[in-house]
Image 1 (cartoon, rainbow, N blue to C red):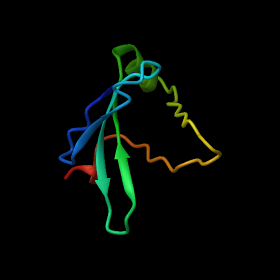
Image 2 (cartoon, rainbow, N blue to C red):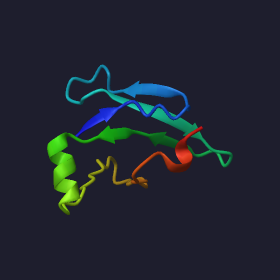
Image 3 (cartoon, rainbow, N blue to C red):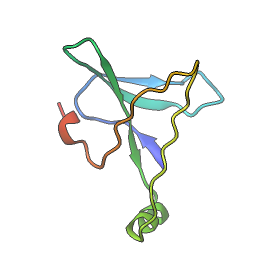
Length: 84
């Protein structure tokens, strides 16, 4: 699996570009009326990964937690209402 730019129409930034311990990650930034911010990333699968998912394998998501604070995740297929 590899990250690709979201290209949903929202402003995009690249995260961790200068952090060698992480792979750079393109992300779209969504700002909501209530003052909250969403950071949207997009991932694509290799042919082998697509076959595994089609055969019933699950997708696992890990979130790194710093200072004991976990943040919500939104995981879905397709951009849905993220498209601007």
